[in-house]
Image (tube, rainbow over all chains, first blue to last red; front, top):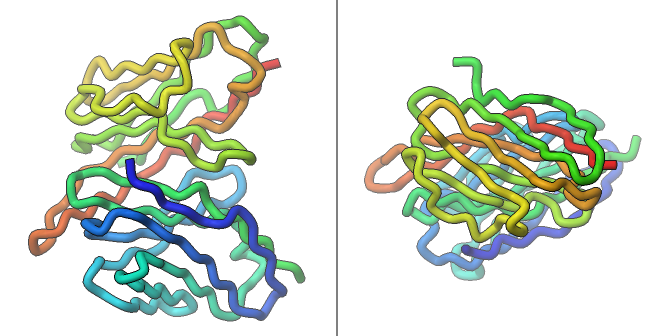
Length: 110
Length: 119
């Protein structure tokens, strides 16, 4: 399978911006996704970006894609304690396969 | 649709016992995935099915693990015999890839997970 890598932990102070990074290896990826997992729950799709886009913004969320470097990031502006969760990066390879990173556990410090 | 349904939500069993986890995918979805999540290793893909057929089981840790999908609306993941290191949250997910302007969107929908504790 393809490699999707993320750091395991991130801590930020409430009100600051959070940036969660992800790298992937498959140059044929079509969609890239961010999933959120709240405590005790399954993963839910947060946002996604087409592989031919550089940026997508949705309220406090900004997704940046650097296709040349195969780097994806999720920025959360004005991070709140309710944003504490595990965030998963995933890529779709255009052949019905979906590959997940291990997840980044975001802790928001009040 | 109620979403992906997994049962049980929690399972505590003794080492050596057989454990069966169950999943009902979203109706109409033709892909089904089993994942395992631990603090140390994050989310790991164990196996996935397409139209009830196992496609890739390379993530299954060892022969003690087996998965079946007898029909489009039901799948099981079995561990026999179970060991303490199998303790984890097991997720089932389903998807139905959609083609948008020549690009496949493979958004997956996850169940709530089964938290397995083997003592």
